[in-house]
Image 1 (cartoon, helix red, strand yellow):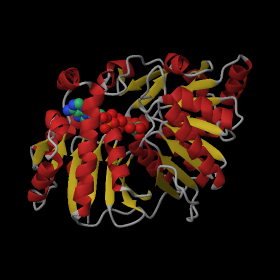
Image 2 (cartoon, rainbow, N blue to C red; image 1 turned 60 degrees about the vertical axis):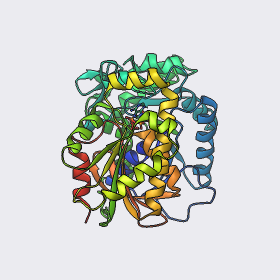
Image 3 (cartoon, helix red, strand yellow; image 1 turned 90 degrees about the vertical axis):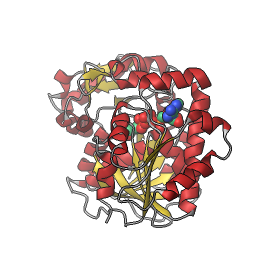
Image 4 (cartoon, rainbow, N blue to C red; image 1 turned 45 degrees about the horizontal axis):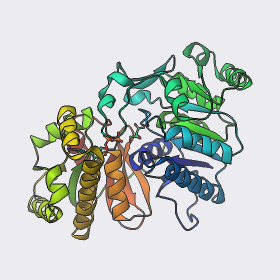
Length: 413
Ligand SMILES: Nc1ncnc2c1ncn2[C@@H]1O[C@H](COP(=O)(O)OP(=O)(O)OP(=O)(O)O)[C@@H](O)[C@H]1O
Ligand SMILES: O=C(O)[C@@H](O)C(=O)CO
């Protein structure tokens, strides 16, 4: 059984949806459960909110997740991080990978953020977002983990204890046995991690075969999809659900380039309200005011949207004025409390944008886990809470097309 430890909640639903699409039964648990899992599944995905926590906390949470997965029958593990390698020189990808390797008595793993279907590719160890290097993409302005280097070996070496080598494209296309031979050579040369080039899905299929015996695999959801396809023998997922009709709201706290485009497109066709940072910090009635506005706007054909989303230059200005951490925290708290109030008052469908934003909303709503439904866009499925018929779409910052918010609602039946 495959056990996945995801460093944020959107990332967890991203990989869970690819596992299910590729024929595995899977459940997504929100945080490390305190009870054993009753359901019989092929894969368990644990969502953590550990991407931007202090390193020690991220390690502690990830090891706790590993132990729970082991106790619940998993024997191969996947550390899922962002396809844009969101991290800093301190971590958390390197330190968590080191801690998981040590705990599993393993001495080698792969570093594979590639997700070609969403434009994340790796060539000569450099990560691309579409046609741009990671460091030239919108990720250079990320509010929490700005990515200013695209070289995955350098990024990993800065934050991990071991050395990082490369299995280049020319080696990957020679097949899984050749990739395994390269792993052996890198290990013998003292490397602990291998960045593996993948410019399209066929390299991920090769890699899935090459890592079949690894205790720990790390990466984005792309490799997970091909590992699932291998494990299921090429089955397709079948019983994907969509949400039931009900009161729906859009909460957008991502400032990515794509979310900005999605918010701008949606503002033209649906009621929208800008979540003001200063108000979030200083007005203790702000959640009530937003709640009031949302409830007054629930009746229309499209859901009301509350958004903090701003373009990069405006974000910089706000962060200079209030401090980045303070602004993020205040906004996240407002979204979390607003979501809680809306749920208590009959909203059943939540569309949230942004990894940190979605994580805090889900934590506040308090569901223990999710069943995985139909994909809205690659890496964004509809989810149904285990406890009750509440549906959520947790959109990673850069995922989905421009009409995502409208399109997602069009699937509700
Ligand atoms: N107007 C704003 N001013 C300052 N900070 C903001 C503003 N809007 C959003 N933020 C903060 O920026 C952060 C965005 O992170 P989040 O993970 O939600 O989105 P993302 O990084 O685009 O998504 P992903 O991690 O899925 O790629 C959050 O902490 C949010 O509160
Ligand atoms: O891998 C990705 O890009 C996403 O699942 C994610 O982790 C964004 O938060």
